[in-house]
Every structure is written in C-alpha cells, then in structure tokens.
Amino acid sequence: MTRIIDFYFFALKVTIALLLAGMVVLVFGNVVLRYAFNQGITVSEELSRIFFVWLTFLGAVVAMREHGHLGVDTLIKRLPPLGAKIAVLMGHALMLYATWLMISGSWAQTLINLHVGAPATGLSMGFFYGAGLAFGIPAFLILLSDAFAIATGRIDVTTAELVRDSEDEVALDELPSSPALGPVSAKH
Image (cartoon, rainbow, N blue to C red; front, side, top):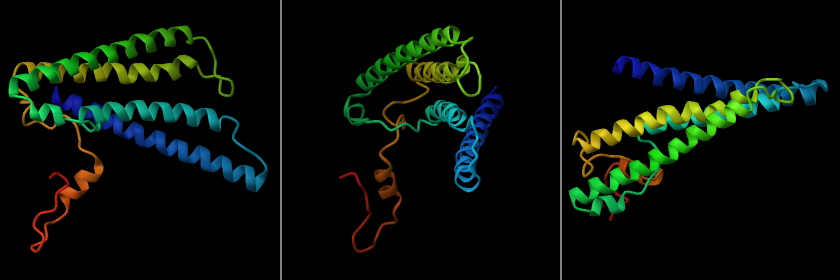
C-alpha cells in the first residue's frame, strides 16, 4: 500500500511539473507570437489559468503530505504533552471540517457547472471546479491519517515536526557554525 501511495504522490509531482511547463509554453509562446508575428494562441490565457489552479491545488496536497506548510507551533511546544496532544487533535478536527467544506462546496460547484463551457476552450467548467475535489479528498485522508496516528500515539506531538519553520529560520539553522562565534541559530 505504501508503494501505491508513494507512486500516487510521484505522479502528482510529475503532473505539477507538466502543468508548469504547459503554462510556460502557452504564455511565452503567446507573447512571442503576438509581438513577432501579430498572431496569438486564443486559448492561452484560459488554459494557463486552469493549469495554474490545478497546479496550486495539487501542490497543496503534496505539501500537506510532506508537512511542508508553514505554521506556528510555539504554543504546542510550550504545552505539557497531554495538552499538546489535545490541542493538535483539536486543530486537526478544525482542518478536517474546513476540508469537508471544501469538498462539499467543490462537489456542488462541479455539478452546477458540469454543462457550462469555458468561453475560449469550451472545456467544462466542472473540470475547473474539480480541482477543489482533487485537493480536498486526498487532504482529508492525509489529515484523518495524521489525526489517527496522533490519537494512537504513533506520532508524538512533542517531538514531531508537524509544520515547517519559516524558510529564513531553516536557512539560518543550516548554516555551518563559526568557531569564533559558536553555532548560528535563529532560535534564541
């Protein structure tokens, strides 16, 4: 089962890369065609927008699996272990609820717009709103799995990295220490 999940997330990363490449080709190609040949790709803007929406939602799923979202865990680190566990589980419950709202809203919008065509491409607008489902369902499962692991003690909230520090702090933590100044750290 782990191999299937790993393959799924590998396929997501490949899809994200292809969507980004498609956006670059469409936008750059359209600029070149407009300025050099007084032509253009009619569907460029619309397809680029759809690609960007899907890229964003799929990237959020990958970041969620890797606990790559930025977050503040200052309070959690200062709470006693039981309090930290309860706080993290409450946070997961709120995230599960918000994700459920995303799923139900995306499902409703997908059904409403299934037979509505996009102006330039004619693609179903249900495809556009389906990106919310492509994010919501895996995100809900990831959050549920993490909440179960926390509740059963497989993840210790006092030592686990549930969120990432700011990129500046991570960069400072990775700097080598100077013998004269001691270790460089953003945390004092």
